[in-house]
Structures are given as structure tokens and as C-alpha cells.
Image (cartoon, rainbow, N blue to C red; front, side, top):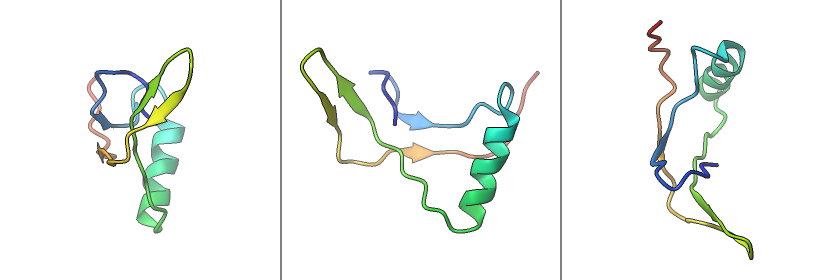
Length: 63
């Protein structure tokens, strides 16, 4: 779930959380469906955009 209004895609943070990134990539390779959606938060509610967003699980790491 992407909560930032400028977020339009998802990529795990390989640099700071390699264990999560590796686990997510492994799960995807084993058939787990990865779904990425954007939501809008307000004081009254949270709404979810029904259109899924793109994601990139590649481990391109720059240190």
C-alpha cells in the first residue's frame, strides 16, 4: 500500500532492508501475487484507488 500522494510505483529498499527485499522477491518467484495499490488518507477516511500500480523487485543496489 502506497500512502504518499506522489508515489506511483513500488520497489523494496534493498539497501536498508535486504531481508525483506529478498523474502519478497523469493515469494514472487514462488507464485505469490504482489499487489500494489495507492491510498488517500484523510481525517475522515481512507480510500483505495482500484487501479494496481507497477512494482520492481530487482536488487539494483547503489551504495
